[in-house]
Image (cartoon, rainbow, N blue to C red):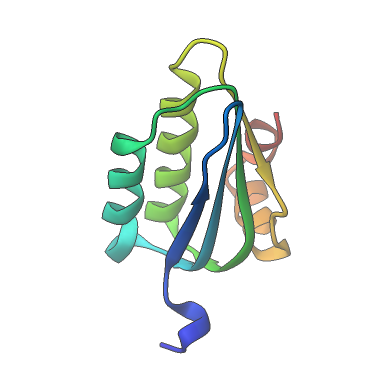
Amino acid sequence: MTPKDHFHYEVDPGNNLTTFKFHGRLVAENRDKVEELIRTTPFTGRVVIDLSDISYLDSAGLGTLIRLKMSALSHNGVSVEFAQMTPRVMQLLKITNLAQWFSS
């Protein structure tokens, strides 16, 4: 695995905007990192999830993104936006018929 493929993330919490930026491969072996992030993040206002640096996404990673969005939306008044999706991520979302759900 190259350093570019190593999964890590950055969180930029704000008053009414929290930005998550994911890097590398979001796959089954590292979904626990995102699950912990979901459990420990106080969601408020607007949430932006930047996927511009995701090099690979498998079905477990896709499920993790779904859980992240659902967890954030379960808090009153929170909106969630996925931004900067790579062509590879968009292709997976189209194949799974989730492209519109992720863009809404």
